[in-house]
Image (cartoon, rainbow, N blue to C red; front, side, top):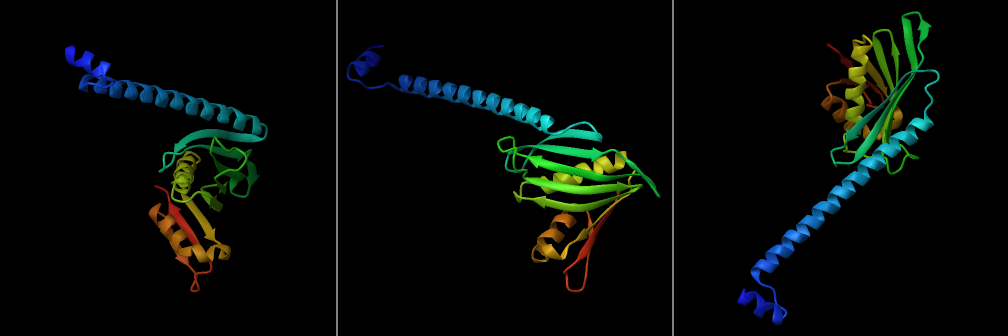
Length: 199
């Protein structure tokens, strides 16, 4: 007690004061982080409401919003949309299907998209574009597509590798191989195809 009085009269801190100050700073930091987390979650929910306003349920047989946390701990809303089915030679098919990755902080510009179509027991990927690499968005697209495909009785997923992406071919091959797809390339590697049989 005397030590504390002497220290305070000289404008100094005791070890106990220092420990209390550290604990107080930790409590403030914890509170700040909790508030920030609540604000982030509120922003995520608000973004979902904004996205819902952009998409109409009319002419859609499926509209889903999936939360996704990337490898870099960035939160995204993944929007899955499928138009009403049409009747074709193989039975029902869904020609207009897509997935979109939205960062809640910038809903104007999607960070990724995938177009695909379902025909009978076959899904054909038409295009995958991801603007933020190495976050796992593309892999999440493929995993979600496989789960969706199984629900619709699909047994095979395939796609075509465009000559426009030839300069990124090795990265493409690594991406699809990592996700369990077989890759066939033309001799000049300008084009190719991917395929995965679902069990």
